[in-house]
Image (cartoon, rainbow, N blue to C red; front, side, top):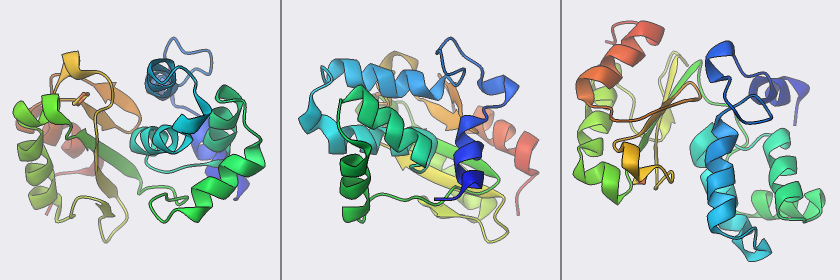
Length: 178
Ligand code: FES
């Protein structure tokens, strides 16, 4: 995995600065899951799923973070992650919009948000737009149901979103859409 990819995750922007010791508040969501899972080693795959949902892909930094948290050898974590085709190691487009479609977010309109972003920017969920400017993803429960619907945009975890606020957010970063 290249240094560039590692730097992209390790180097959180100012807007991503949070209370987490790493300075990147996305790790808070991973930590929440780890706590709920009681740091059990058999939660490795589930933890990798959560980390991928939050970050959009699995960088070397993230794999090492998970390995340390679960007290597993990094080589084993890397081996498991590469064995399953469900995980991606490629960084997302210039901007990344992940909409939680877990039950709490779903009942509060998460699917409408996904559809609106998908239609406006001609990018199917799970893919990156042709010009590489936007990656649209969906995630299972991100563990912050009280904030439903939750959208993670460029690493910022945003609660109580709707179609309008999300489109505004994306337009502010990517432009008006096709
Ligand atoms: S269902 Fe979206 S945060 Fe739980």
